Image (cartoon, rainbow, N blue to C red; front, side, top):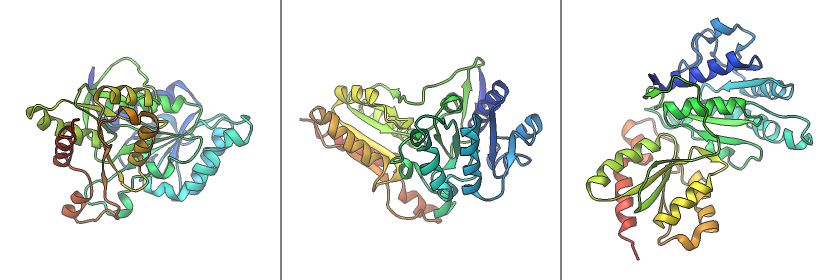
Length: 327
């Protein structure tokens, strides 16, 4: 076991997969000489050369299109978005090309590519650099969407994403890059379609992902002192959702709170509520409660920024309210 920073866990995953498979390559802005905005590709340029670690112009639509074409020929590109918000410029390439070509080609082409990078509300990054795009892409057929939350799952999930024959959107939160965790010395991979039961409990199921996992766990420390016993599930896979794990938990607790950093309207939480009501309505003893970010551009002001996203104290209040609704 070795203590590893989140961004180094991602770097190790890329390095190991590039060493294992010569078809894997990285492209994006400043991924080469500079080593990436958050140093996820640091020193890989020196190790693998400019043909496998490609510095691109500031043209997301162009280099994403190049990556799709490369994937069609059998290569395995890893796109680093300097900020995931910038990938809105490549929405057409991701949705109409990467997501659909395997189907529209009648299965003649696979699209084994990963699109990864930092997103989420950081600390005073402003509206355009605080985007949470997972819900934007959730409706696109053919994509897999993963949100990592710890150094351990970041490494195992990224290795699996690189080996997958489908396009994977891999969301990393900008405030998690300096997390530390002991990682196994031996190689490991994690499934892209499974949620993680972070804490077993019986009172209420809390569904969350990415940075909000850590806000939920902060809230749990307070809740435990008050005698509550929440079950915490990190969704990890946002497309497809792991309803085997979600369903098993709801059948046990019969109450659900969703905690997300995404916007309330049309978010991952909205899809979860609809799916839970479709599949598990008779298991619910109370309406599903959703805690989401406010539907406004993220303010630059630090105090206002904090008010737009879910905080641990709000999660505590939500659990207290939910458990008080026992029938």
